[in-house]
Length: 339
Image (cartoon, rainbow, N blue to C red; front, side):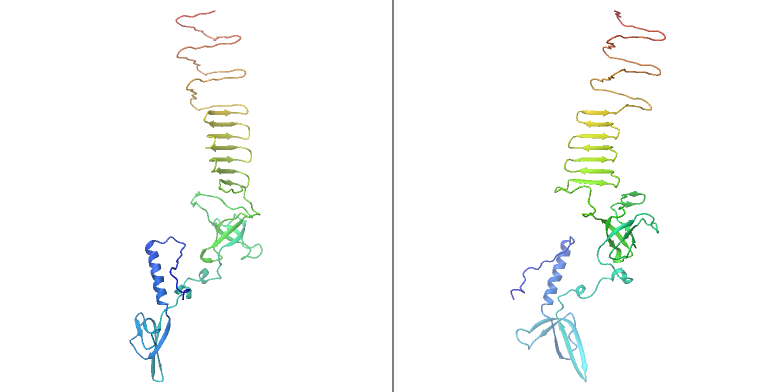
């Protein structure tokens, strides 16, 4: 009796039921357990009074068996002029769906269904005969030989003419589900890593690295620990955005680079550097602007060149200085000193 005396009975669900639904579920389970506590049948001389969903009082069977019972079934038998009534009380401890098949057959009963998920290998990703952008997959447990099935590809963003476009590679291992458990309607749910198909990165305990890497080594990497985003090509072109170093670095495979740091911007060219605009180019410094050339510095304008200072203008040559024009040369000031 101690084994049967359960004070608490836990009901578990994988869905977040609301409080009212939980109470209804618990009340139904409690009522069912009370009704199925006693089960049996009792027969007596024919009587039309007993009806299902009513209560019958049983007497004359001793203190242990006497009492009220919930009628769940009534059966009348007439044999050789003798009428007997059999009343059933109590219900099964199992719910209806546990005793009877309450769900539709797999694949709507049209063909044998598929149980659970299946593993497959990508055989072809183009030339879908029905133009549904499906992927041809071989399923070792379902198809024989090289025969495959065309499966739709599930992705996190699929819209008309835009979205995420990431198809698996031929030879990749994928996991498939089946609509209505029908083997002719497979859907690729995702790709799988394994010791044969290893990822480009090895996960750490912090899961700090995320990456998108194509088969030709075009790479986009996220470093959550250092807060760094890196875009890299196999030829050596790269863009690095780093919160750790407070910088943005751009490099190309020719040795040219641009660094954006807290100390300023540095643009380095492996050969020549050209700044060109269809209209104007302005270079302005908060304090000074320095322009320096290792050999010569040329400044030229098709209509004119203006060099102006709000205070002092100094033009100086270490060896010699020359002021020359094909026309008129004008030197003018409040005082002009020629030495």
